Length: 468
Image (tube, rainbow, N blue to C red; front, top):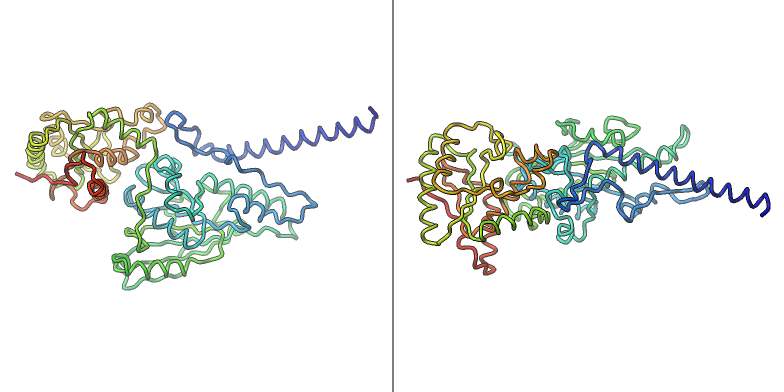
């Protein structure tokens, strides 16, 4: 072998070693960026926390003699077309049952705007980027995609990877005299329903939407306060309550919303607090993760598949009425158990179960009336809960989930599913419990649908016990 051949092979080997080093360094940077958010996976409960690029993702590489636009190539890889346009609703102002509804509304908006819908993080019975768990901790993304076949969904981690690669391309291509890659283009909008406005309007706004500073976690890749990084426009839409209350009104509202938000910006950031649906059609509830569904089935099996489900939200009760409330509940339970032959009872409640914290983030004033009512109920019957039946055991063994389980969190979804499956379902009357509850309504609606579809295991939709 000649000296020139040896030299050529040596150079080729050095090139591949250098290329491997660059690629490895890139992936290490990706993992370091996300290390504070998702340090481990939930392999033991079969959830997927994507900490690396998806299997069909490769690093965007453009050589000096390549006349392709590197930003367009990046966008094609992530978004399937030369321009990426995201809808990122980073805050939804209500707890999980209503937030579930609002996320569906904004997914409908993403479809109308032809934008990628970012799957916002979840936790503490909320959907919001301040939370620490990925969307699939609560929800089944595969089934969500089937409900919205025309919407491309990306996780927050995918969004971060896109920001990361875009930033690297920008640094590589731009210099002092040649700004090939522009700053991020962002419209940051607040969309809220208000009883105090005489008409719905859309206008420019001040820059104070993100009161909890959650968006700052994306720095330095997305820095809304750095004009060299992001060009940001701020707007607000204040929606009159009556413009959301009927199907006809929501037709006009959705058309207006689509019109004003049909924009060229790459990223549409939304702080949403809308209370009601945005579109005339209300899409089905986002399906929950297989892990939660399996936990609900385990509890049903432990209850011998025959039980009364109770939803008792004590927060909304009148404390001084609780002694009478619990007597009314006991009387109703005895009647159902005698007439229907059901022996088991499952209680879904906001009363503290794992710690001194209630199962609701808004239930803070717990009195002796509350303690005495639950004590009386427990002394009369064997009361089963998600805790006593070993629900979410794998999460409870991991201290990472302590905060989630010691307050409002994933267990609220589990309670909801167990109550849906109950043979007989009851809730409290006025003064004992909350009457207008989206949580209870969701259970009743699903039970009604099952009864219509001839589910013979369900003996009622919902009953309320009476104060004696």
